[in-house]
Structures are given as structure tokens and as C-alpha cells.
Image (cartoon, rainbow, N blue to C red; front, side, top):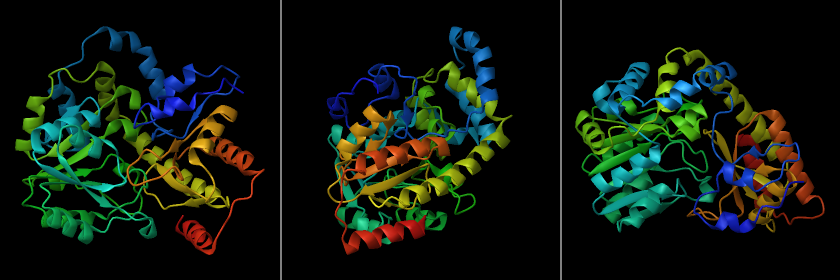
Amino acid sequence: MGDSVDAGLFQQTAHSPSFFELARRMSDNGQQLVDFCIPCNPYFPTPEMFDALAANLETVLKFYPSDADTISGQLARVLGLNPSTIAMSNGSTELITWMDHLWIHDSVAVPVPTFGRWTDQPLGTGKRVDMFPLREVDCFQLNVDEYVRFIRARRSRVAVLCNPNNPDGGYVTRRDVIRFMDELVDLDLVVIDESFIDFVEVERDPSVAMEAAIRPNVVVLKSLGKNFGLHGIRFGYLVANPGLAGKMRNTLPKWNLNSLAETIVFMLRDHGAEYQRSLQLLARDRYSMAMQLAQLPELTVFTSQANFLLVKLAPGIDGSDLRDYLINSHQVFIRECGNKLGMSNQYLRVVVRPQQDVARLVAGIHDYCRPRQWPADDELALRRNAGRSAS
């Protein structure tokens, strides 16, 4: 067992501590920390791509990158988009920050639970955040019509929709997202956060980025770090009409992207097939992992179209205690959701990972729960069965 990680580390921020911070606090016992917390793609880049990056590392680190227009222009060519409709940033969080400063003047509607920056950022700058509650009884699925009525009743001027949503992985069909945008054409801004859209498998071409490029008030947000499993590089982009995208480009610093980001963007053109294969492997793992977790009587597993699963613990199980046990006894790092608006510490978000890592997670939960008998009522049993069938 490694050195015990102080539970207070998890109370210092609304987000989880970094992998590096945790690894520094744990002694080396020959077993590497397995990260089920930070959503990433375990199959991309490929080992061959990492080898190529390593061989070129000195050049990448030694010289300045190109300006953002050059890098985003290459990304536009890879994606088949007009360069004037793209603004690329140092992570999607940078774009959320600037969207708040540029376009959120009064109020913003946000479903909760969702990615915390969509509530924390505007609250921090004194905006009114109208929080639309997603209900467990509905498996946290967003009802577009109810959300639109809520926006009208609150007179929100900006609306956000994360699709798939974080932390539950709930997905709204492309047709319903377009209807949502049509209903709110008079708002100051409609943001569709598609950070996890590439992981969707129930619908072909689920993105509405092409629609955003020709609409007056829509911005689609993308996160390359989440898709490609490269969070450390920090790169994201938005798609919008040329006026909105141009305003964002002119606001961002000229050299806000680093040379690693540039190198990866220029590699993508030659590795599209490998990326598509990685998405297929991840979809396979998501199904397998959901089935394995649903077999544990202590867990309820919710359906997801992202690269993570939302799990609810049985009554009596403390998610914070389980998190601390897993990291200190099994070196498995999970996301306990007690500090997410609209959730409690009975909820966990676990990232989809390959089978050998899932086996460690399941073994750790077994070990934690073995001495205990958790209460189970009829409602819990029904939810658990529903979770298995939905998976």
C-alpha cells in the first residue's frame, strides 16, 4: 500500500485534485495509480504517435508555436469547416471564461448537475444563474420542452446545453437539439457544449456544429483534450458564425496555443482511422464496464453516451469514504460527486477504461463492501434492474 492520501486534499477545490498531485503524495509500490476520474480516451493517441512525439520533443519544446490562426486553420481543414467559423483556445475552460465576459451580461440558464464551470464562472462574475434541475427519477435525462419553458419563465438571456452531459452521460438527439436552438433564436446566446460528442454511438453525425456556423446566436464548444486523451496539452475550440467566432479570436491572445497542441493538430490529418478505431474500442468497453458494475448489488448504473458512467451507491455507503479507501488501498482514483451542484456523495463518476483496469476497480469495491451488509429496498432494486437493462 502507498502512503495514505489526506482526504483534505479533495476539499480544497470544486474539482478533483490532479493526477500529478495524487501521484506525488503516494509512495511507489510497483502499482501505478489508475485514473477513473479524469475523462480521457485510453486508445488515442496510439503508441506509435507517442513515439513520434517523443522523437520530436526537443524541437517541440524549444521553438515558439505558430500563431493561433495558423493552427486553427489546419484544424478547420481536418474537420472540413470554414476557418472563419472556428476559434481555438488553451482548453475549453478558457472559452467558457471569455464567453461569460463577452456574451453573458445578465442571466444564464444551466441544467444541473453539469460541468461545474458553467455555473461557477458566471456566478463568480455576479451573473444570475438559473439552474434547471435534472431528476434522478428521469435518469437525469434532459427534457428539452420543459427546459425551454423554464428558460422562458425565468427570462434567461443565455442558455447552455451540454450534450452528452457531464457527469451522467445523458444524450439529447440531434433533432431535439436543433429544435432547442430554433425555439431560442431570440436569446443573446445559446451554447451547445459538445465536449464528449465524439463518444456518442446511438446516432450517426450527432454534432450540430455545422448548424451553429450559420445561426445568429449559437456557439458549439468542443474539447480536443477529452476526445484525444491529452488533457495535459489543453486545447479546445468553438464553432459559430464568422461574426461570433471572429470576436472570440480577436479577444484571445495571439499565441494562446502551445507547440504540443500544434504538433497534434497537424498529426490528426494522417491518423483519422486510428482515432475512429479508438472510439469503437471505447464504446465496446463502455458496454462491458456498465454490465460488470451493474452486477454489483451496491451500485446503480445510469445509461451513458459519454466516456464515463454515473453510478449511485446503495443507502448507507459513503462515497467519500469509498473514494479514500480505493485510492489508498488499491491505488484507484474515482470521482466522488458530492461537490457537484445537484448531486450528493452517493454518486460517483467513473471513466470508461480497459478491462484490466475495470477488474481492479471492481475488486476494490468488493473489498470495501465485503464486511458490510447494505440495506436494499424495493425502489433500489427496481432502479438497479433498470440500470442493467439500460446498459
